[in-house]
Amino acid sequence: MINGSKRIAQPIRWAMVGGGRNSQIGYIHRSAALRDQSFALVAGAFDIDPGRGREFGVQLGVDPQRCYPDYRTLFEQEARRPDGIQAVSVATPNGTHFAITRAALEAGLHVVCEKPLCFTLEEAETLREIALANNRVVGVTYGYAGHQLIEQARAMIADGELGEIRMVHMQFAHGFHSAPVEGQNEATKWRVDPRLAGPSYVLGDVGTHPLYLSEVMLPEFRIKRLMCSRQSFVKSRAPLEDNAYTLMEYEGGAMGLVWSSAVNAGSMHGQKIRVIGSRASLEWWDEHPNQLAFEIQGQPVQVLERGMGYLHPGALLDDRIGAGHPEGLFEAWSNLYYRFAMAMDATERGDGALLAGLRYPDIHAGVEGVRWVERCVQSADRGGVWVDY
Image (cartoon, rainbow, N blue to C red):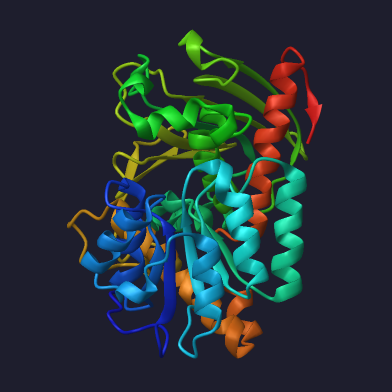
């Protein structure tokens, strides 16, 4: 079910804060946002160095007069234009997310923010209050949730194909930081600095990704309490962890486990989620995102393939190319970005019915990610005790 038509009548006038020339995540944001003609990049504050940011923006085709030295100037100047921006993406280090997102919301802009949304639950709740009061959309880039088979898993679980859900095993455990690479890598250096990264490293950086996948697949599940143990195997990273185990008890008695790690030596990515029911299990691995394993007790394993007609209609909605052709990260992010655009457009038009049926990682998902990290840190720092969620 390939849909090549435009999803909104006019593209959202859009800017970026951060995401400059050497930013991998900035390139992903732009590739995803521009793919479906849902956004038009018209302005930005792309770099902490104003001259470098201006040069880069011009290379992207942005008017040099709309390449600003900082986010405050960007918001102030664009507010004075009749064709000013409607939305902004925040692709900067974690420590800046709260201030930039708050300023954008107070300027009447929709926001797409990198995760984590901010450092503390108090800050997250503040952003939620401002967003709701100003009727603005906040999207959080849990990009893996845009893969089609996540929607398939959600539908199968809702239809009872797994039986009663007993366990959810999650991991995002790569090995690229098993040595102190931050000495030579600026992109890693800030991630292990509490001033810039916040109260955690891998819990917030990678652990929240499979956690959000579980929230998509199991929307009715609520965490009752959790306990966490975190380690700094590269000692110079302390007090921030490069490995953590989190055990969770859900309301109703199901159990969850999250392994968050950057020191799983030899692992490329290692992000997996396995949902285990009383009669069957599902497993998805982001290194093979076009396949979903369905394992019924006592029967051969089934591998469901992206794009096939036997899938749930919701899983086919995001097809961009026929079955058999592999789709990956850019397609997944694009699926989120067109949803962000549709939510922003529907909000502007007051289309509550469309908004009610549109799933995307929103301000509430951002708040829950911050809550989870905060509770994990509390548990670990008290010696790995159970804490109420």
